[in-house]
Image 1 (cartoon, rainbow, N blue to C red):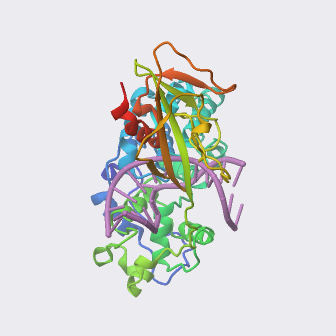
Image 2 (cartoon, chains in turn purple, blue, green):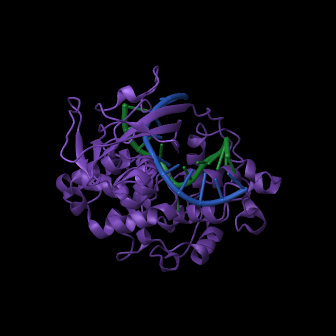
Image 3 (cartoon, rainbow, N blue to C red):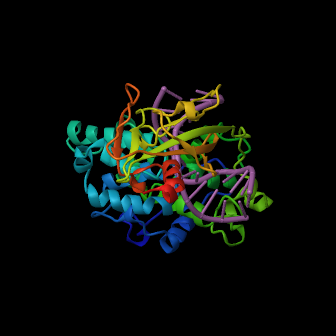
Length: 372
DNA sequence: CAACCGTGGCA
DNA sequence: TTGCCAAGGTT
């Protein structure tokens, strides 16, 4: 609720602005924000600024994740766990199941760890400063700055991908990311106004999302056009400069879905660290380690049975590789429980798509036609 | 510093 | 359709 901001109205420049001859204008940004800023659930003020728990939870969810995806998860989490102590007291597996589909599952594990630290070591009170916030797992430089500024009104440095893009264009930063992060943080510190410390980073991010977009930025109607070097050059879309990325290798694997007449499946809990760490999954082989030197086959099944490979494999793209996953199915007679390898953390349960990571949702969906 | 870690929307 | 990439952090 930008118009309801609790920060001071007047805006003054820092005295040490020396980054450009035509100064960045926070007044124009705040004017845009008061008119076009979004009303997001984690911005609801209580009473002056949003609760630190809401700001923290939303910022963790928003890491590399778009707002529209986060909203339903945020509403579900805050409904089930209204405060940090409630979240800390929940079983980790419940939190992971609620996180299923959001991705980057280390975030959920760190979320639970951090909640326990805040609830049971810090008396339920979030640190207000960047240093204290950085000591919580899952909070890096951006998130610490964001929470301290947004929830506590501190004059922190808050530079995410959106703000990087705006400032790289405003000042035509030619240094490629990620090396340019230091330079851009210095620019942020130089242009940061004294007023409305909670609103300023949020205004920049909303503005970046709505106007200063990645592709086809709205330079023709931009409220910050006067100070934008790249905009004046007509080269805004070519900023920020980024180093070339490596191509994604392809991997292949097999997922094994065993089900009985009651619709129960064999599901494993994946190891706590690494890909889909801690999440429920169908047993699978051949894809989730770095150098698969052997091709997975039905010989890798968790137990001997009459496995049948479905015609259509599941396709899934991870951050650093693309996966072509075959799906092997078998149906067991009721009451038969096959021998499982030692050490495998597996259970016969009725799978619920909502509790599974997206890859395993796709596997489940592929199997549905063959299901009891 | 660079690899690792998800997912879905969009051009 | 394929490629791009987002409110990053950890190791």
